[in-house]
Length: 377
Figure 1 (cartoon, one colour):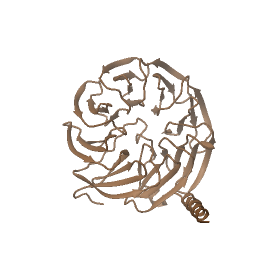
Figure 2: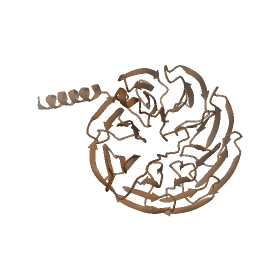
Figure 3: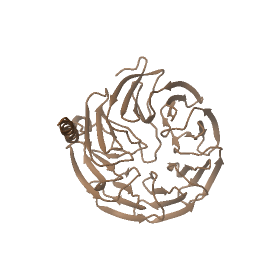
Figure 4: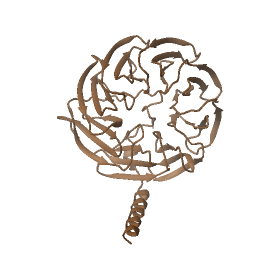
């Protein structure tokens, strides 16, 4: 009987959790950015133009009952994220008021956002992609099957969804209607990159294709010499990508010509980040590299451990976490460590905020609120 009571309580708790709905008020929606992707814009810069001061300390911790996927979104007065166990989570910026709604048995990638819809790609379950209305708290449309390990992409009126069955689908974000379909020759397990003219797809075996955004026609396809685990980044009509053999490439976006290649002695698992002036990437040997857009090396910084998420760039700093439970703030102009924090758990995603505030998602079920001394809320 005791076991049955415990089972009943557990089921009731799950039902209660599933019935809560992440939401935003009408007033908050008027302040929202129009669209957000995992890299915070369609060129995947991982750049947030805020000023932050140091040193940081942890001021609050919250259990969210799940491991966050690779991006946190700061949308109006809420933090929005998804978790690997299938939940969409919404919380206020004090980490007190938490809403959650389950969408899938398993997610492995971050959502995308087009006001007021958030697009959730699933790896397992009934639906590979779902559009949820944050204002009206209801599902707007679903795409059956077409499961994915890639974050959806939004650019203007086009939603790009890549499936684990090698498909690239262009959808109408308002109703889910398929606008075009492209069949890639190899598995798509990484994120894509996109501009208003092109979509960039890359496989783990190094096959890279560029499609026309308006009709899905292949513009070119090239084969890189080694395996690639990173996602592409687009800057100034060029693709920047790194491989497992320690090579970084600059590829002309319209033609597919390799403009430059730099060989470094470390595999890369995380993509480039940029503020538009410099490019930053961290190798598995713990070394941070800074480049000009011409791939001229500006300098390096030795850190401890393999990075857990792409470098987050702010106005003056780089925010970096590693598997060794380290969190670094690096002066991006002088390439010097400003602060090194020892965390209790590994950080898996990060978003900086105004008033010298940083939010970290942690293994396996935590959100942290960090503030600099003197930072205001």
